[in-house]
Length: 418
Image (cartoon, rainbow, N blue to C red; front, side, top):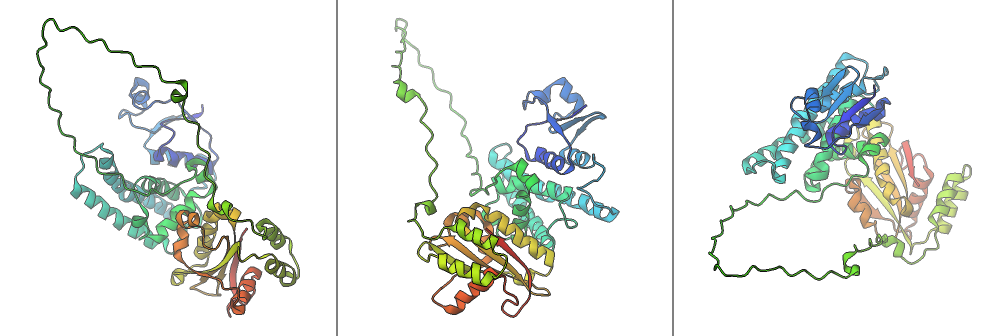
């Protein structure tokens, strides 16, 4: 018998199980399900007497509650990829699952549901939920300052459940001014949702830019006084409305997608793909071939160069966390691949490690859509390169080349965005 999931397909509690199934290699099927109809049927109520979703139908009987279903699916394959090998690590996975449910999800829902009008809106209740959520985010932020994942060095079920609960907040309620107080939580969330198994289920995610408004209190409608009609008053016959012309009745054709402003710039003599090919294909004499080729191609009117320096290098105390932080940044820069080239250096032989970068962007400023969509941008200080300054020009060459020692220190790693 197949594993059959009874639930709406688009729901963060369902996403927990679907992402766990991707990591565990488990096949799931969806039942033919209609909310408020299917879950009230006698057959469904036998599986979950409360009529709540999701419910997983298994060969051994039904399982309900989303965390229990995700645990079941995660454990189906023998390798237990989403759990770890020691009792203490697995206890910590359960610890963070409970935290994600009781401290994150509960307080998001206490804030969110009344604003949808599904519960009475009470300002003191919202204030308490907001305060409790900030306290939970603060604790999570502290933990993630020195950890890429909640437990261990790879994705576990705790990360899946935490991220799905954060997903509701980031997409529906928590605006940038709220989450920016917790940069490690932001980095964690955007790193996880851009992992292939997450992205396959969640798709492209955009953070909400507004908190849902407080529902307006509706005044009770006043009954209208009925006026007696004269006995002989003739009945009014409604005149049929003239039929609209066919042109008006038809839906408007979809408008073409607006072009990226960078595509409207005057043509540049620098062909970015040619530079990327030269960079990738140069294996020897890099300074003489690739660096010289870069400066021959570079068009200061069509492109600009920028140095970036991470603002919080004192937090880079663990090497793999620092490397993952840079890797996540480059993943989130994927939206700019057509218009940018970048080098990111992790510098130093011991903590704290320094993170510095060089970026080539189309146009004379950092593209606005990159600033808007990639939250990492505000974690760096950005300085435009003055290529008339030979010192700055040489620094550009060294960063492209992965020159070592760089500014007197060894390189821990160098990553390229191309």
